[in-house]
View (cartoon, helix red, strand yellow):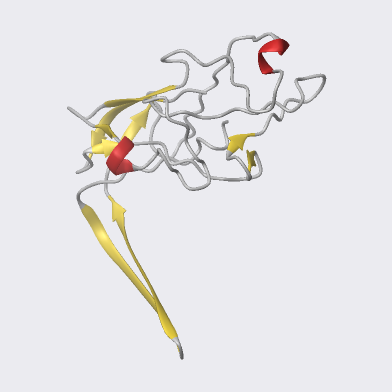
Length: 164
């Protein structure tokens, strides 16, 4: 999970600089427009641009509770995978964790792969949930967008809760 939580994106209402890139071909054009946010926060009291790793251990579950493909068991408790933002400066009004799809994500279902070495459980993966207990699609960030799922920043702080 550490590699997925290494990139945090805070989207703000204020933008430092706008970016516009255009590419043209004989039969069409591609336009990309974006911006650069000016908000920074401490994450769990760790300075911006420094790793703020979180280690969460789900509860032990009996093998029988995961007997069939798609069975779900053993959710983390509130606060087990929590990020406390503080000292936020800038114009952002909401925050969220921007998840990145990589080699630890099972691409067909967007769950985290079990990378435990040794005699660990086989065919077991981890599904991430937002603070409303909706499954997050890591590939597309469905149920993890700033407009619908961003946590409000108030008085320069916010608490982000995620579940697995």
